[in-house]
Image 1: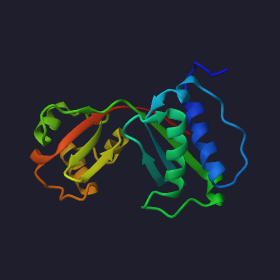
Image 2: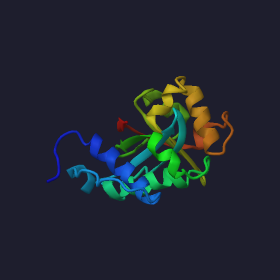
Image 3: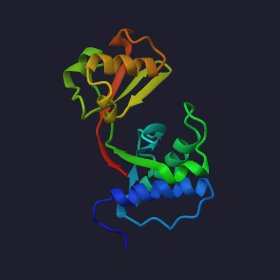
Image 4: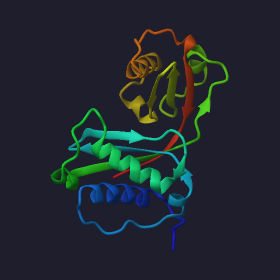
Amino acid sequence: MPSDIDPGPALIARARAAIAAHLNIATPPPPEHRRLGERGASFITLHHDGRLRGCVGSVRARRSLGEDIDENAVAAASRDPRFAPLEADEFEHLQIEVSVLSRPELLATPGEAALLEVLRPGEHGVILHGGCRSATFLPQVWEQLPEPSHFLGELKRKAGLAPDHPGDDLLFATFTVDKWSE
C-alpha cells in the first residue's frame, strides 16, 4: 500500500532504481508512495565523491512524478552534456538529490527589475526566457551564488547571454522546491 509518510526516501529510491536499471545493476524495487502517482516536475542532481556528476529535470508537471523521476534520473546519469555518462563502478558511491518543483509563477511584469523586487534568495528557483534561449537555476544554486545580481548574471550566462545583458526583454518565472538528499 502506498505510504502517506515523508515521500523523500521513496523518491530517492525511485531515482536510484531507475539509474540502476539503466546501468543493468540489480537493486530491490523501490517503495511506493502516493506522490509518485501524482503529476509532478522534478530535478535529479547527482554527486560523486562530493562533486556534481549530473543534474537534469523538468520545470512543468507533464506526467506522473514517478515517471518524471525515472526519466530525469536516467538523463542526469547519461545525458547531461557537461559530463560523460555514468559508469557502473560509480553507482555505489553516487549521492542522489531529488527536488520536486512547485508550479512556476510567471512575473506579471517582465524584466530584471521586477524580478529583483520579488526574488527571495535561497528560496526561489528562477526560469529565464529570452527569445529562443532559456535557463533554469534551482534554489540550491543560491549556496554558490548568494548575491542576486551575480545569480541572475550567471543564469543569463547559462542561457547563452552576456551576464550584463539588459533584463527588460527577458521573462522570468520563480518556483520553490521540496528537496531530499541522501
